[in-house]
Image 1 (tube, one colour):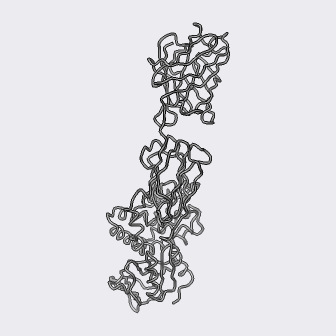
Image 2 (tube, rainbow, N blue to C red):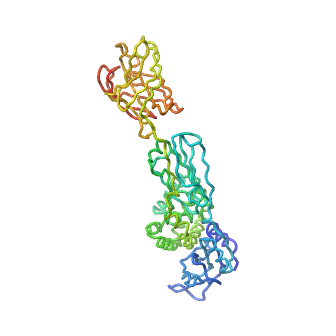
Image 3 (cartoon, helix red, strand yellow):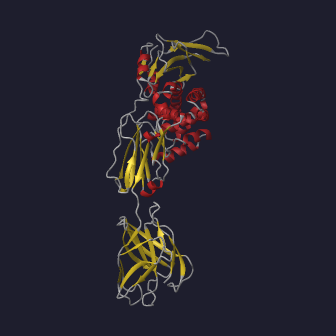
Length: 549
């Protein structure tokens, strides 16, 4: 009987990813009823199947219009495949292998009606391209040199929209997916294999499923740290985020576990019929949900494979089809009741033939191979902060007392800046800034690299013994090794209870409010004392300030 129509197209759908040979379907009937033990059907081959080939028998479900695989056994001489079944209808055999050599051998084993070299391990990606130069704080980046055989292809550069952000790009060069991790927070991420705009819709669709199916699907929903075969992940890190990683890899990739591998395989067979790439793994995870625990708990590849094959038996269950159909309906798929059984049927074929693929050289090697081929480590420059350069600051007339002239705080240099207070002194309208190391004053680490890169001083009183009209003068300083971090400060408002400064930091304007938290309404410090202040807007942190006028 020829393989035609939907029977052929459904077989071909599996063959898009797996190397696949499909036999000639046969309508098998019986003159009498089938007993409880079932009957055995067998497909024989002209020559023996290769050792790394898998075979299964499957029937064509007329209602679902798809092939459903059943647990099958290849004979010891590898010249036949058999299955014990409990109904007779249209049956066929599906054979697959993980290598092109084995696939070529299969081609001569029988008179096939469909034969195709799949792409499950033929995925080869191009090396990604990054914008240059890298941010100045990046001294080096360590990763394996680009090669067409590497599992992950990397590049490191800058964010075109923010030259201070480093971007690490990674593209999966295998036919299966990888998990990625980072020890740091990220500024942003982009995954070519997921549709972030669909994330909430996907989660909403999963919320209506039974919990075991919904939980399985959520693990592979958009926003998770998973990159599928041939896809790319781009991650942006700020300087502080990168420094927080220390000497650990900033980005590390690990091949999916056995369940994740099967989800990726099945997802690749279903994704083309769905709303977006992101739906493929989710539908696959829902389909395989009932065997997730068994597959994940397997301690060896052989046990995981056995659990996967047993999962195939669970798929001949209308509960799974209903769950998948419910998800598809909420995702806006036309005729979800027709598509769901087809997707589940393809999953049964994929699982039945997953053995050679699961045990193939690439996957097993990547699970045990060197992690350095899958890591990127950033080497930041060494920060230097032994000397502070106080930027020139001009104070408008009337700041220090009603009749005071305009004055300028001239540049000054101070060392040992871990403690001290701001002392404003001088004559003839000229003031200087110095540090008194015996008293504490406010400091901040603005980028989280562990180095103090901002000092905040509040000067009060002390001009000719008179009070200031604006009682709290803000002095912002930056380290000498980072010129331009704070290039200007302008006082735009000051009251006895609040001071506000407008600062220009790395080219961005920020409004900074400083609020005196004690209820003391005094205009100025009249003697030794402590005042606590808090930042109410970014970019700076915290602080307390001690002053001895």
